[in-house]
Length: 483
Ligand SMILES: *[C@@H]1O[C@H](CO)[C@@H](O)[C@H](O)[C@H]1NC(C)=O
Ligand SMILES: *[C@@H]1O[C@H](CO)[C@@H](O)[C@H](O)[C@H]1NC(C)=O
Ligand SMILES: *[C@@H]1O[C@H](CO)[C@@H](O)[C@H](O)[C@H]1NC(C)=O
Image (cartoon, rainbow, N blue to C red):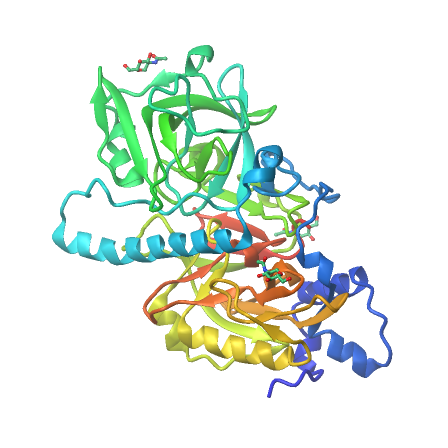
């Protein structure tokens, strides 16, 4: 099955898809023979094996299209990161990253099942129910205070709440690369009072009821892996770019923090919750943001607030509806409706994705699919990869190849079909995930239960412009947003 044949549909793909294919083929230098070979190639990425291995030199994207309220986004453990020095010795192994990724997915799944219980019982939130683990892969630098301190913070669409480590570290602070922000040196920091509206919103954003010290609101947040942050709930001026300054942003000034944050100074919450960065800046930026997560650990992307007058990304976008779900109103639900491998739509019954539901998450690394969607994907992929020797599984990844004897590899293209029937092709880095050249794996995993939510993770989002038009209720995708 799934023989790569040129069909008329593959030629009449939406124009941007064809452009994407063209760009890929020229970049990877195909030496095409006859028309037949060309047609066959259009369903495959031919890529250097080295391309999947981490780069060691920072070579920032040359197509930096950032403008407006935009921050540069880099991979936390990559050479372009400010945390690179810090992480040289401490960077987790690929196996460790995948292990933590599974913790995050478990915590999202349990959050979804817990909330249904919680709603029926309408009880108060228990103090130890953790939020999703905030150790995701991508960081952005943001200026905090007046004068500003530049801080590398993890960006997380699965988090409601923004916090950073603060001096004096009354409990303790974990080691971070940037100087620790000191509110007493900033002319724009203010403590939030216990009676404020914002303080009362903390219970939902952190899952822990705030406490009160000398009329100052005190927050605590626990992540599922025993990481935590506690401190004063303050407000401060944040700076995106010289002319993009936001006053009175509410955040956690953490004086007692610990956890696996990889030298980052804290976390930026980008969920739909009222305390997220997106919601707090909605009067100025219209509840709209976009990002591009760079593909290789060596390049850089962007996180941009607002739509910059209609076209902040510069790429042509396709939109799918954003859905809400009462079980987790702050997560970004949308519809995955199908998957194509080498131009062929896999036969997956509609009910499979409908039963589970789907979210997009910047903090989950590997896309998780319902078992009845993952199995046909794996089968089709293995079929197309028959010429390469398979090897042992890498943690949650069960379809791995030993490519150590190859300099290039030809992999079947994969695209995702989303609600309203848009087709989004994945970059080559969104298809394979490498431990090393002798263990290069299909970058997807199956969920355990059919009812577990599907999660479109950050490996698959790489190089796509992803637009969250929260106000307009839609999610946009464009190819080639960064490299
Ligand atoms: C904020 O409140 C805490 C606790 O009352 C206090 O120690 C700290 O000095 C206050 N900070 C400012 C800038 O007022
Ligand atoms: C944005 O601009 C690019 C080029 O500048 C154009 O190709 C694209 O169609 C525009 N997108 C939208 C949504 O207007
Ligand atoms: C890397 O390669 C070696 C074999 O050379 C293998 O034993 C090891 O498990 C591989 N994977 C990772 C993630 O390091």
